[in-house]
Structures are given as C-alpha cells and as structure tokens.
Image (cartoon, rainbow, N blue to C red; front, top):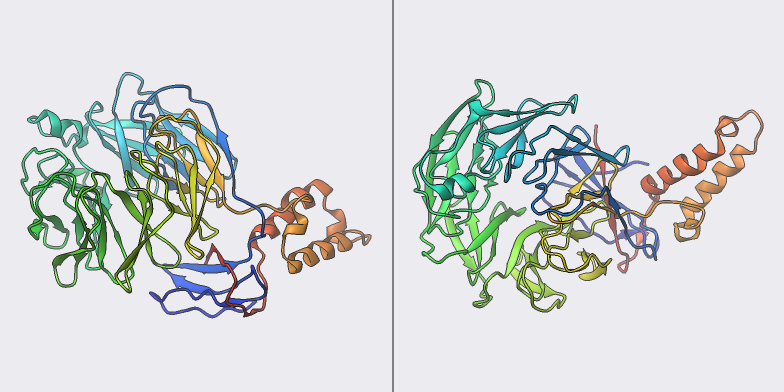
Length: 478
C-alpha cells in the first residue's frame, strides 16, 4: 500500500475509513508514522500478572525502555528488575539488599550504560550495563549530595534530561542546586543555589527552545535551566502556597501545561515569550489531578487524584471539560500512557480498577479488580511487543496490559473482512503441495504468522464514514 504523510504538528483526522469501525490515515512525527488501523470490535484489552515478588513497599521505580528491554531501578527492592517483552519474561541484576530507598529513574549516556539517580541510601549513582544485562554497580565517584540538610539528602534530584550540549541535567526536588553530569569526563558540577527547602519543583520538561522548565510545587516561580548559557533562573511570581502544580506536558503549540494540584488553575508556560499565565478556575480542592498525558487527538488528559473526573484540556481552543465521575478518594490513578490502539491507560494507585480512556469517543472503561491496596503500580511503559508494562511499587507482580487483541481461531470472526479473507487465502495456499506455505508447520502458521497479521494488517483503501472509531499503532519509518 502507498501512503502520504501529513505535515508535522497537525491533528490527525479521523474521517477516512473503509467501513464502520475501520480507518486508515497517517501522520509523520519524529521518525515514527502513526497508522490508523482497524481494531476488532467487541474485544477488550487483556491483562495479566507477571512474576510474584511478595509483599513489600516501594519496590521499584517506573521502567525505562533501553534496547528492547525495560529496566526498573530498585527503591527498596534488592536488585534491578529487567523485563524482556520479546520473551515475556523478567529477571533481576545485582544485589543491593543492604540498602533502602536507593534509586529512582535514570538516563542512558552512551547507548548501553544506564545511570539511575540516587535517592538517599545509596550514596552514589547506579550504573547498569544494558548491552550484556549482567552487571550493575554503584558509582561513588558521582556522589552528588551535599553534606548539609537531611531533607535534601533524602529526596535530592529528579531523573536527568539530556541538554543540547550532551550533558545531563538533574533538576532539584529538595536539593539546593541543579546537578549537571558530563558523561564524557564523568564529572559533576552544580548550577544555582536555591536552599534546602522541600519539594521546590516538579520534574523538568524540555521546551522547544531547548531549555528545561520545572513547575513550582512549593517554590514561588518556575525554574528555567539553559544548557547553552549554563544558567538556572526563575520565571514569574506565583506565590508561596504549597503543592501548587505537578509536572507539565508540552503541547503541539509549544506551550507547557502543568496540572493543578492545590492551585486553582492550570499553569501555562510559554517558552517563546518567556511568560507564565493561568488557565481556568477549578476551586480549592487539595490534590486535584496528576500530571497529564497527550492523546492522539493532541489534547491533554489529567488523571484524577482527589478530583472526581479526568480533566481534558484542548490547547487549540484553550477549553477544558471533564470525563467520567469516579467519586472522591485520594490518588485514584497514576499518569496515563498512550497505547498502540490510541487509548490511554491509567494504572490504579488507590483505585481498584485499571482506567482505560478512549479520546476519540470521550468514553472510559474500568478493567479488572486489583483490590484496595495503595500505590500499586508505577506509570506504564510501552514494550517492544506493543504491550504496556507497569512495574510494581507496592503490588506483588508486574501488570501487563495488551491493548491490541490477537488473532486466534476463537476471535477470527471479530476481525475485519479483509483480514478474514487473507487468512483464508493463506490456509488455501497451504493445501497446495510443494508450496512454501505447505512446508510451514501448522503450529508456526497458527501461533505465529496469523497472529502477526492480526496485529499489523490494515485495509489498503479507504472510504468516508464520519462515525468510525480509529485506532493507532506505531510503524517505524526508514
């Protein structure tokens, strides 16, 4: 099939379809192509548990995909957790059982070496060899913590972001300065001096101008880190209230939109004008929403913390609206992750179910019942197999969600007619003596080839139907 790409930054139209429930369209973005593909109707995403790590709190941080695997830094767990989506398995690396509250997040410096940010007990960065996945060591030479300030030593920095100069910048949570790591020389130095107050800023977001922007939690202004000028400055005067905003999300218009936690409004950071503004008025509720995630419709979706609904922001119209009514209660879900089917998946923190939201229909589904335990999983990561992996925080297992239904004889009738015809042609071809298909083992055809077609096939032509519901999948572009 031949495809035409759309200009970068435009919203993906959802009106080109072959028949109700099917759609095809393209969008070029950062070396990836968004392909609207058919999803069989009547089949819900499936989920399963992987592993059993027993009881315990604060086991691992969110996963980091590197080289097809997913690496999870240990907090109170005794080793690095490595998930291999291709094999559907996991294993651990290292032994750090004598430490607690060890590491969080990380960054890859040279394509194969992963560095995890120290939290408190480790006293140094954790280096993981991701090429062999057989070693993990603590690098005390990258000891960045100041001697003074017990609080700053407990929660120093957020995971690093790479600047345009190739260095890595760790913005401060409680630490008194920005920590800069140079992977070439293994040197570390500091920018700015902000005191040892707790929870000053949220994790940084990279603006289109290359600068790093941190929304104020307890600080009174936005932190702006300029890798080119090697400066750390403040922007705006937003008051001294505590727990104001959480991490921002960069929209297609270049602005950064920060979730209101205690603040009454969404914080809007404009890197082009170097200004801040407030959007909306959502009242005095403490702990409103979690950080946002951008959907395929380019809107931003904020999961509810104490709030009763998902907050949706349209950056184009600057309008907001709510989806769902989930009642009260703290920290219902974690920030969402975009699945290959175009839906958003929110792991349950204190909620009992997995929240699945479809941006194209503004509808939601609650899947499973995972019990009343608090802070079950971390934010999800998409694996190389298209499934979503949620590392356990207090939970005892890895949560694996497969958004795309797989072909099987039992689900054959739920797939589109073009796909069913392709399956029939393959099965007829297999009956011909001497053909390559005839030489394929039956198990390989049914268990490998046909499910693969079920996940990658989409209709070669399209007609118009305004009532279609589109799905999305990443396809690599040469």
